Image (cartoon, rainbow over all chains, first blue to last red; front, side, top):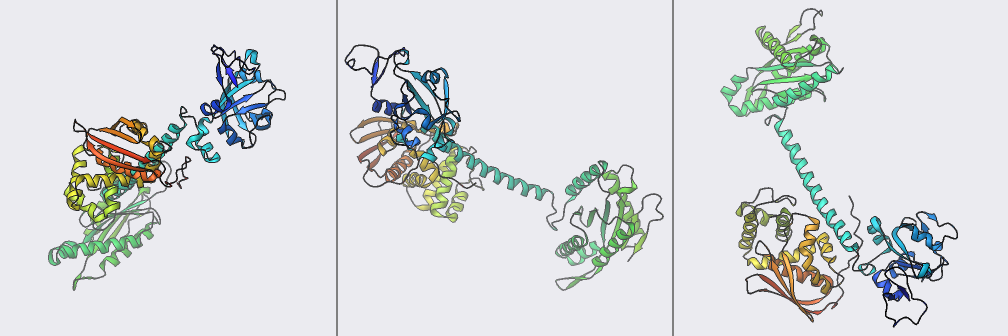
Length: 362
Length: 194
């Protein structure tokens, strides 16, 4: 029997006082175990006199009665100093214990002296603290292992409710992110050809210019305008025109590299942002190859559609500080130069000091 | 209405009656074309419109559909587990329903679950009064309480009634808390693959 008064001056244990009028609370260990399933009663000699059912369950070494405290428990993570007086536990205030058999399980609690001057030892009340969910899993605990006054069930409930809510939020975020990517791609894509649109081109060009200012690689801008496209559209109809535009996109994709940007910026106008092979001769060859492929006849519903194209190309190296609008305007001017020189041509504007611009017809 | 509730109804309709029915309800009730998101809020009339459209399409009384919804909710494992935190047996679970609103708020501070008051509990008989801002919780809870009785392995008869004030009330006659083996409930949450 444990008995303790409100001032900690217990009077129990010696018998004969059960019927006495007084302020002591007489408690049999079994009763105490129901209220505090993780209590531990240590005698003055540091040996266990009784333990609550949940504590016995997690220590897993039988009734524990008579075993020394430090046979099963560590103070913090270290063994208790030999001969640790039970008063020492009381003085420590908030206690952190762990189990010798399972050092990962940390227990928190406090000790109170029993009886006059701690004559009946100390009573410890322990709990799992933040490691509750892990302890429940590791020791196979059930609701019956907790006192109804313990908030453990609410904590476990809250943890699962939180996990469920977080899972929903995660799913929502995933759906929103997917929708955002689709919307972004749609906003930057020409729906007919799947090429980049003017907005995407301008963004890429701005980025490229900024990268160049930070020491990035040079690049070229090629402006392509189809020749005779209006005739196809007017005589064979819009479906034929769309077919031609789709084929132009296929040619441009095939003739450019992965890092390049191919954009349809108007009805029959295309702009290429080229990042490799910036040698003027190779650019001229590229332009000629594209024009040659555009000129290959293509058949739409039995009708032959014949088009060509004119290209103007400028290099970032031509400018001390390249400006996207300026480069586009210059490529446009070079393109019209090529058109004036007879359609189906490619003009590359060379950087200053590199001689005359080659103007190559096909 | 909290999106969680609307989405639960959406999942119930889709899982139980199929995608085609859900598409039909979406159109008939003029719901958001992409359906409901659990963590957003929607105007209350949408919920009623959804339930009415589904009941009409299925030729089922509204209350019967809502009872099926209540039973369906218990088949969702995370929700079943949250309900089982209410107590170790069905009797304790019934008593814990007074905390349902509070537990809902603990999980989601803007979740408006009905207030449930236990007005009488004599040997094996419980009377639960349901107060909510929107109608329809009575049959949902009736279906849920029946399914939870099965889950606990209890033998109970649940009757949906109306009190003098026109509020839904549930009369539960609990004949046996452990009539047969209920479903397993481990306090430790199952490990979910991320």
